[in-house]
Length: 487
Image: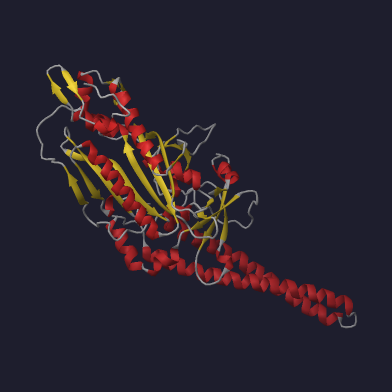
């Protein structure tokens, strides 16, 4: 991979203003690729870091980003697009209006191109006539008359271009802002209404009352919860060691499988957040101060960790797929499930994987391979679990398909996700200019949340054995290399 490092560094600066090119694919009309000057502002649909209003003059020192929304192809299968929006429960996008705006935009830009051509022709004729006037003094009166006529035509043409510009700009803005709200396509195997259980392991019929991990942790001094509630916690003694053991086990396995380890940032700009199709309320935003305005978001370990690394880069996929992983803290906004303790902790330790390839078929194959590998690992815990394909209403905007591994939480009497594999295909790379090293095609991506250490430990605690005043952990022999099992 050869990323454009100067561009990425500038992108992270809060002072950076981005220039983006919105690409509409139709015909051979070169001017359809517009330059936009990035300024902060509220738009009719929503504020966007990926789109900025078109200006007549562009600061050449700003950073160009090619924003390929792929509108032409999506509207060709309008029926499929409407069906997918409906299955995702997205009802605030008017596809008919988008289609009308897009067709109107093409006509407006075609007219703009014609006027620009006329303007250039007038400029050429004026130059020719001036030269002819110098060389033919005797017929200068006739040339002067023709010159005035051409100048007048050029003046009117220039005024027409100026009058047309606001309409082109506003129409392009409506098309772009609506298009940016479109979700990814759906995988053919994504269920449309209800989650599909692919495979079960173990028996989950135990509905008897049992101590929660909060009660066990406090009773046997395994966890210290802060006075601000169960969201702030400390693992103690054997649990602290188990956290390291689980992390090391997964990380060593990934290194053995050819994944490259990265140390990733925890803070991200709105460009990365929106580029990943994530709404701003789904991540933590740093508090704004009048004297120090900021658009920084805190997410920690997530898909954004990898996207920030490859955004606006050309990727060498000669030896595809490229596979990366990272381990670190993950931060999520506070939920109302305060009583569920570590199951919905605002801070957790996670191991994430990220893969890139050049086409959809390889991307789909990667999804299946990573799913099978993780499923084989989690069955070793010998705890009731299941493999579930998530239905379209529950998918994130960038996901074409998501498969989860869920463990049975005894105290809650329900399944909880501990791992997931998501196929995002080319959705993010089109928005954030991640391209092949040789060519202009977007790369395809698979993101995997391989391990939520904090939630997994909470589940494991509830499967331990309590005898009189002693507690023993579930048998985890495959971790003996990394963890001294407390007896």
